[in-house]
Length: 315
Image (cartoon, rainbow, N blue to C red; front, side):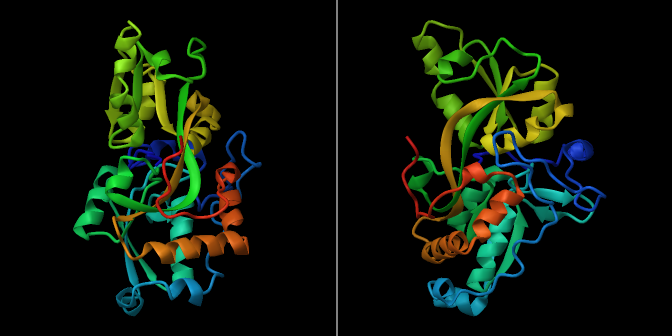
């Protein structure tokens, strides 16, 4: 989103895979659920998608040329769990919330997923050029993005903060003025970076020292920067930070949620694909597959009641 953010995450964090318990081919492939979620997540290898079959109601909403071609091009940003990542670096097998929802929707629409990895910040511009039909990467629905992009929502995530466990000086952030004088690490091209940069005036207005924003293109560098004290606090996705801080060896703690955001499939403005995707997501909610996907990744608190097309940003 997610946002996110973030991303090409896990490209520089390969060394942490055992720590984060991501190996889908290991003897114990379970990924623990986030604090506050509904218990531990299911096995990372659990298949909640393959049993789905084509929904004539949803597939019938696709443009005729797409139904005939039978292929939809997805631009995907791979990062850290639970959004989208490589469960097995050797085989580059994709996994995560975004991956399961993409595959589930494709099953209902009767199309093949043509998935291409792309840097997070390049995906939305590539939609307008036609390189991709759909973008996934935990993209949060924001007022700014809605000017050029349409969304079909499928979860509720948002912005949160994390710090080192031994940092007791920083309290939960309810106002960005609390960040004045600090160095905040975040991911390049995300809503986090935009939020921080557009609100820098809050410190000057309060007569305080400005905060510094350090944007990282790789999550490994961001994580290391926080662990080594080069940044004081990290701003990233709520689900991602909760998962990360649940791993004891990272030495981090989840500080708090800051701003919730709907997350959705991203499309070129005016795309004719959105009604079919919305119908597919709502079918997943109705038949129970939706809840199984969220439970699998330990993010039941991110459930939405129904999918919407380009809803306004959460206040």
